[in-house]
Image (cartoon, rainbow, N blue to C red; front, side, top):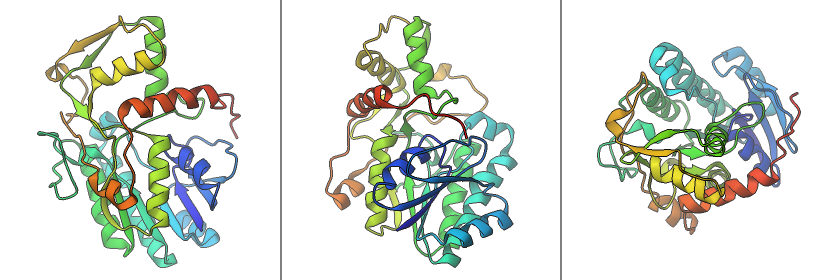
Amino acid sequence: MKILITGGSGMLGHCLMQQAAARHEVWGTYHTHPVILPGGSLVALDVTDELAVRRLFQAIQPDVVIHTAALTDVDECERQPEKARTINSGGTALTAKIAEEMGAHYIYVSTDYVFNGGGGGFDEQSTPDPVNQYGASKLLGEQWAAENCSRVLIVRTTIFGLKLPPVVGMMEGMVAALRSGKAMTRFVDQYSTPLYTGDLSEIILLLMEGQATGVIHVGSADKASRYEFTRLVAEIFGLDGKGIQAGPFRQIDGLARRPQDTSLIGRKVADRLGIRLPTVREGLVRVKRDWQEFPRERVMA
């Protein structure tokens, strides 16, 4: 199959590109971070520019579009809600509409932030109720994707993984802080089911190859608090966790309100694919492995 991945230089997008290239023809797009990746071609694209999107889609004629490009900075979305809506909602509607014109299968990567975080354990039948502009813009993206394309798969998830240089992501920053012994407060009562991008990429490709549609939740087999996650990182990377301090969720700062427990139930995807979802620990072990093998010296295009 011919696959087009928007946001191909992002944390999830580059994993998807590299894994998909082993068995498909892959194209990817970037907006602000041009990189060189083995096995796939990356081209510049503004997903809100209809003429540019249409030209690229017509040139590639993809069988599948996997839309990962998004504005994911939660506070930036709160500061600029129209920008969030333009990119996360409008960009999704546009790419879904043109995918429909191409007869392509459209896969939209959404977020656990479409839920309000009250109680956790959200499955596909749970009612979305976002508490911030990021979640609202992604939920609207879900709705517009479904309205504009007849073959749509919406994947709700939350991820961790490695960014492409020179961008420093959450994992890289956390490991650096742990190595330095820097004090950090992590909440003992804010939960999610984070999944390693390498694991999520493989699951998305399996769903794609099975022509899955509808809404599906993909997360780790267990949920972890921010505090538990950070302690696990320290343990698995062999670092001293003395700087990790436990704190309550009510102390959270930031412009945007955050949901407290967005843990997802992934039974549907596990049953469909006949797999066991990995635990948070297992995902972090893979991060460490890939950190050691990852070509961190990648040259910018």
